[in-house]
Length: 447
Image (cartoon, rainbow, N blue to C red):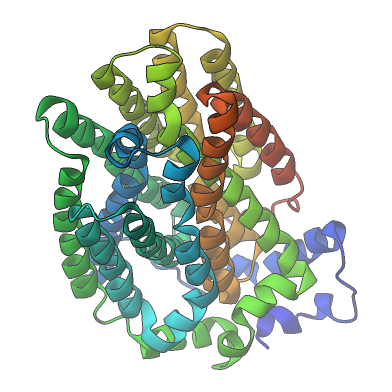
């Protein structure tokens, strides 16, 4: 094993609970100097090839954001086009879980065998397959299957690019920008999809013609930028971290999930991200239907409500990404959840369309920095040799929340009405805030 596991402070101690995890994390941070003094982190602009790589990941996240945010404005029209119930139409949320699960399991292996270049091929390629199928507006069961490929593409990109950028200098700010581009895609998707359907009067599937073009650009850009990041380069970078060529090959995901001092952090972050992503996509996916049927808004105005929510997320990620490290990631995320729950209560309890649009926009603003903040916490609580495995698993596992929880909202809405959206979101938000408090104390930053 690498230097982290050989540290004398760790030998002979049992590791079986959160207190031990906390002590272990602090000792590791001290023994390795947080890996910063002798280990020069990459920057977004150093080496120079990282500029193109960083921009490629930004574009990939824009495509992912557009993919996830398209559900909201399209769901009412999928219901009408295929004559579906809430529960049945919600299968488009549920089906990507197959892709997310596969990404969580295979992420580390793919890195070891194909490097980041392999992810640059596979993730956009899966997007391209899904969007080409959607353009053909096939029978609904085929459409459901196509979203499995979209889920795999999102899961692979989420895993790989979060782990890579999470290890950079100034990772809070760069991750804020990365997820901000997700927000840009999520802002544009409802605007474009709603305009095509309500103003241009074309079928819902015309939106996916645009997505095909975006995925084609993603494929070309990512492969070009990461062409030098093959398997040999990845294994060499891991060898320089762990001191062993086989450390990651034999231990990656298993160590992150089953060695107690690492597993405590990995599993909490995985379930936190599952809940967070579920809240985000459930709100983005059902807010248009909520505004139309509960707040009695017009088609176009309700679609713009989804745009306001995703715009709030985008601005929150960029702006609060600079504030979060000043407060401290663990404390800041608790504060953001309190504000998000407060605006959720306004959205639920004040029966006014315009108040609801403003409330959901601010809800998005405070939800924005959650995902990048969690990735930064993972990089500080776990050894660098496990970042790809642990962050990759947590991000892909968490992404399954985009499938399971919006589907659950749809299933409950079928029986109780779509007004169940906000009680569901508020209860889930409170639960994962408590889960977040179970993380070990953060090690002090090194000067």
